[in-house]
Length: 453
Image (cartoon, rainbow, N blue to C red; front, side, top):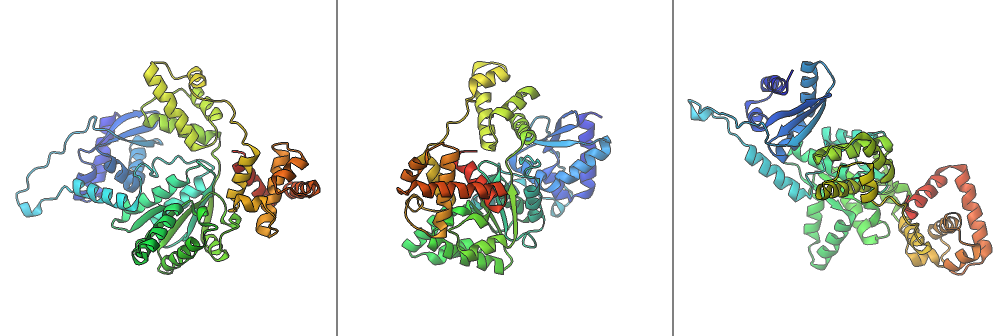
């Protein structure tokens, strides 16, 4: 079956199941199969909002129809393209009162306005989120929230390292809710923006407006929630915002760079609320997922790259999704400007694949202080509270085992302590790590962040 026949059959079935208005608005003359090869069906859509709407609402239905008609498993890829799309021929009805309005422009405008007001970037959709073993649980839970918001997984907290896709998934949830349940009041914000808005509201005596903005919503999405740790006023305000929304059955979704249990300067009552719903981690993407991400990104950019080159890049560019996408875009730009073929040789010559320079002792201390929500002066100082002692011991351990500093050098860096204190601290953390318990896991995460792992 060729592309045209396949899509005509799909449209015929969709026309029988959809309302006339929906069919004319989103499918008739606005979609078509661009290519059909090796089980991959590339579907062209007339506009970005047409593409996003179909992906969010009709992907499963279209996939089921295609596989039933073709008798084989199929992967659907949606692309914004006017190629091969014919404008719909709409006959004038005999009775004007029975005319079906084509509301694509109005619908697109309304959705676009809702996304802008909500601070949602349209490019972060579920369809563009590549799923693998490291993120499949987080993806499944996020989709479940869109299917049934306000009912389960509330609050939802997604955590993981830098560049693993937390922000993408957070915004995909917001976009999905808007597309399926517009009008829904949605706000996406970083914790930094939340804090700045609060400070500005206090200065201008507009706290009523500030609270109305963040509390009169159906879905609140807060990114990098770890940065409110140690900020007393922000924590107090967010605590009441959280309670207000949760008490009224509104959905709250948070992102964090670590398990909330590790936020030492976070109020216990907030930590309990964050952990009281669904907490799910996105792991560092494995090799197979990195390859899939590069292939999908290359396809979206219209580039054809052989698999050995993709694997070479996935192995060399590192685990971060951002480093993968950035490296690929640089490679594509160089290939276009120089006219050279994309292969391993071009990758070697175009992308810096040297191992990253190890951070200095000062940089490591700064990152450890940031991880534990401490000031650098507290980490290096004389305070003996438990919130300072353990981070300080971890710092001594990493400076010894990873940087190779002497006990005296470490003692000098950390407040001029006696070197015997350093020896004891390093030995203590070594024993904790060997037990491979909860403390060992925390130390491993601190090491990854402090050393750029």
